[in-house]
Length: 389
Image (cartoon, rainbow, N blue to C red; front, side, top):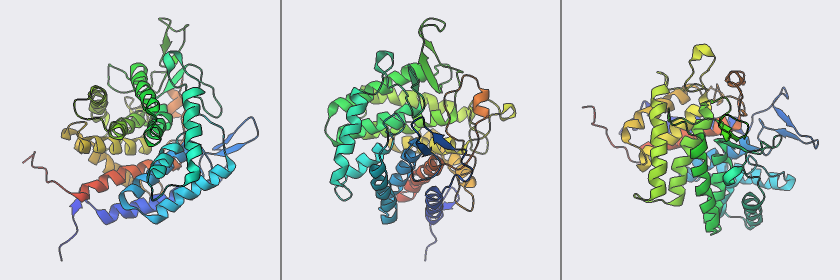
């Protein structure tokens, strides 16, 4: 009997086992200290760490689960997702950039006639219409990154592309509302305009329109090239090109590919020898910029997917594979992705990022799952690389 295929030192069964372990940890995370609870002025308390609440942490958690379900059709994974939506819709929540994030997964589940539930349609409609008509905007129509606690007037963040723009685009396709898709295109272009650092190819965490800033337009806060913020971009661009079905030669696709390639080239320069990236990508570890696992997983996912889809060159594949190995090394025997930084607002100085605690979070678990699911696709049809022979 032939032995199982091994790629980069892993068998497919090893990767599935890691994903199952990550999933179990994801749905059983507990905030035993209470220090990661988000306390709102109206008296509500949002559990950002545990599974049974509604925040971007859960939206990314759902998307990681969906990635595995889309590859395997695992009934247990589907049950986790549908149970989450059932329970959260009974409770409800307030609309903001981050609470929009679960609707990316919901739109995929609604699109599939084998998983669709009719009662989901009003939720998709209502939240997408809120984004289009009532979400606060910055100058030039950007999606203002308002959250549970902060209005963030005039602010654009990297995170918005993943948390709100991607869900809006998907809902637009599923509900056949082209204006949603066109708005999503505009948001990608605006966010590139104000957030990508042309001197490095990396992205700043945020931008604020501020007439009092030097030059009278705005500023990029601490000019932090923050890893997880950058990873949202590395994930979102390949997802967006694929979602819209942009063909080779399409102007928007070519533009986004060049943006992504510029970023990934910089990521290759700043990757540690062990495959990890630091929380501030261009700051040395000795200065406080610790290695960060969720971003590393996000980079691995986006890079490997972009290579597979032909959005960037195959010379970047090794960068992604090194990151996969690093992520696997960060998974504990209990299934926790270690060295995941807690949710991070835009900082006014670099020290802000160094002080963020590392703790288990649903998005860390999910980003590791996404990275491993993309790696599993290697086993669907492996091509030997003879480039170095």
